[in-house]
Image 1 (cartoon, helix red, strand yellow):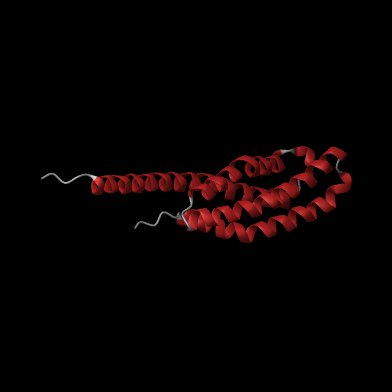
Image 2 (cartoon, rainbow, N blue to C red):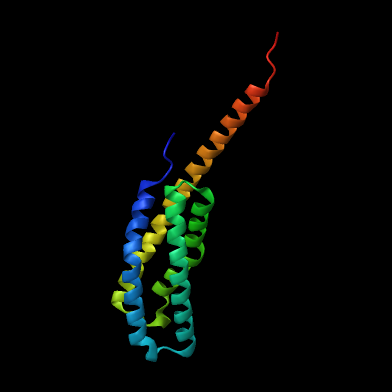
Length: 155
């Protein structure tokens, strides 16, 4: 019985769990400082982004832990999709949009968070591919043994 969990992915998730509150506090503190200087539509966008990232990150980390440690393909696929689609583009938006008046500390934590997300996308893809291939092989072997047991014995 081979273990299919990915150690690099699990380590990245572990460190991400401790980094995310730090990232959130710094981002909210800097948003509080620069909020009066932002235009109205950037104020709305940043508040919406912070709410979306906060909720999505909690769900994403839970799915990553469950999918990787318990070797559950649907949860790991959900983690991969939540990492690839909402989280990574949002962090890249926060990192590269100069209209947001980005501070150096803010840029530093966004770079670290983007690095976590980029690594997790790649690591989760390979872990997911390995899990799917191994589970498909197990299923085929189980079906093969079941069919052999049902085959009538000659003579």
